[in-house]
Amino acid sequence: MSTEAAFYATGRRKTSTAKVRIFLGKGEMKINDRTVDAYFMRDTLKRIVMQPFELTNNIGKFDVIAQVLGGGLSGQAGALRHGITRALCKADVALRKPLKKAGLLTRDPRMKERKKYGQKGARKRFQYSKR
Image (cartoon, rainbow, N blue to C red; front, side, top):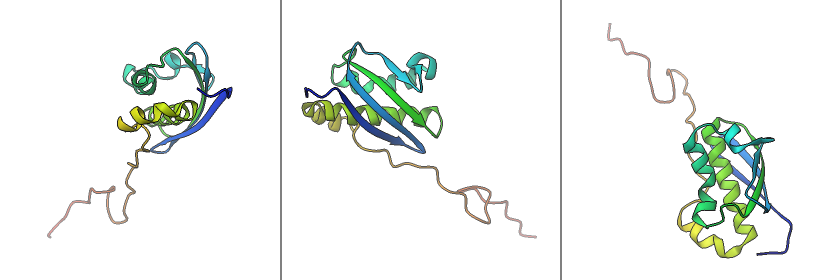
């Protein structure tokens, strides 16, 4: 571990961005000035956010303060996970290998495909009429 007080990182997913600050503590998490349970109601989203800590056996060792902007809750949870992962790598370089192997350091490039002109959506077309 470094002797630095806090570790900053930015995580992204879809159109969401999470500015994350982690530091040694009791495992408390504040997301937009709310607790994890108050911000992410679904258990799956909480599990996504906690994944980097579970993988590196650091549950309850770091406090997290995050500012999450844009997108929906699913994208925000993914962005937060990405930011926490990057911050953990800055906190301890030895954690990089297991996090990289689990694929948590890679930014998920999947985005919503844009709507095309002359169509109903990105892929869906208007009904074809022969006559």
